[in-house]
Amino acid sequence: MGIGYRELAALLRSAIARGDYPPESTLPKQDEIATEHGVNIKTVRQAIQLLESEGLVTAIRRRGTVVRSRPPMKRLGIERYAKSKWKFGLVAFAADREASGRSWQPTDQTQTVRKVQADADVAQALGLSEGAPVYERARLVKDGTTPTHTLTSYYRPEDVEGTPIVDPTPGPAGRGGGFAVLTLQGLEPDSMTETLCARMPSPEEAEQLQLPTGEPVMVLTRTTSTREGRVVEFARGVHAASHFEWSYSFKIPD
Image (cartoon, rainbow, N blue to C red; front, side, top):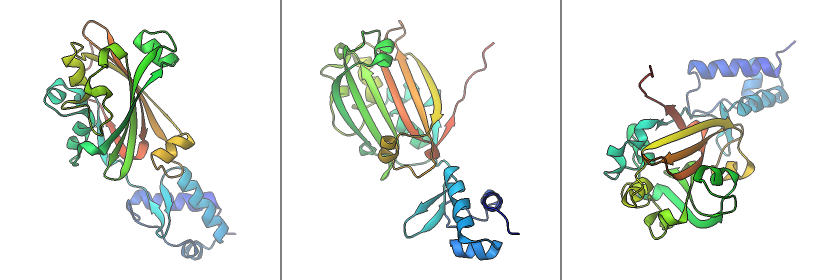
């Protein structure tokens, strides 16, 4: 009796882990896999679907079943927000790119700016009433032509009115980005809280980030405050999990 699809998936999974099929390589055709392992095409299809659901492979038209790449970029922790970076013109996503040895250009970030009503989370973070007007700055960041993540920031109108933060021109909000702009407003960012969780994407997120079947997203919320404790930005980001290796360095507390 031949093996089942779970056993076949385990064999293919092991072969990928050993490097028999490196990232961006293509698995043999399904009929070839069937012949090699003495199973029918239905069993092969079920095994491939299981590997797809695990995010190990993805079906690409005219190429076949392709082994997914490992995260190509570091997503730095506190280092990406160093004042020594953004005060001299290097915004956070660019700091990630440089740490990963990858090039970047301002147009890698597109954005939409509009005034909206604060939802419950935004209102709580900024100390406003739900429904109060806030500026929303939504960015889509790409690595070349491939979307990697979205980041949507919210601000009190009086903090950013008339500044580059509310300018929808593609790219960072001027030299040093939004943090540099806030500093010029007398609202220098000094502390930050980030919260992370993982989940499967919504259909809209999967389309916007061009996610293959089975890829989860890392969801980030970020609250940024001045030294005096005034919250000057609340942000939510959705990151394609396969594009980032998250890295944090810190001094261990006593």
